[in-house]
Image 1: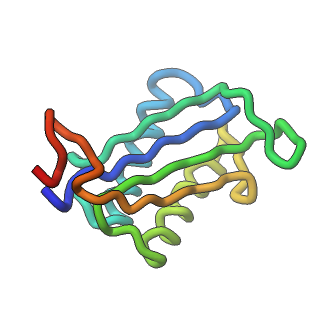
Image 2: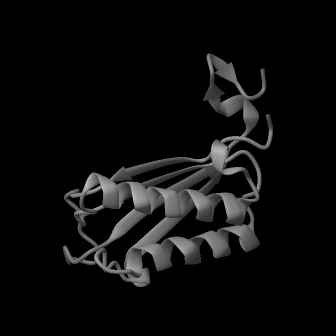
Image 3: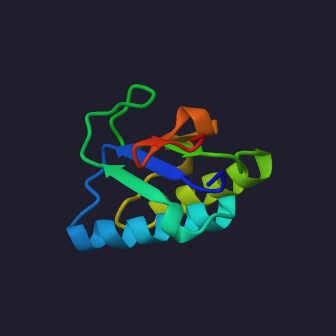
Length: 123
């Protein structure tokens, strides 16, 4: 189970649109996380939290704060690739969030510190 469990949470002040638009974005982000971290799509969890009250550098222009958590596969190469994919996805219309207004925090979570299915990945 050590290979499981990447998750991506996104908080943004942008309205990400209809459920269909959000589902399409979550599908794109799922594929990006899976590809960049070398994990199956079926293990990836995505959480979008849009229309939030947010400010960056004194401005309420579009911005996003993202958190990626994974059991392993968190390293400079993978993080840089995924940061680029996330920035590209949100730069597109209709979202329009510039890459210099997106933070992506990467966390390498130990198996003992991640719960799943009534236990932890450590057992």
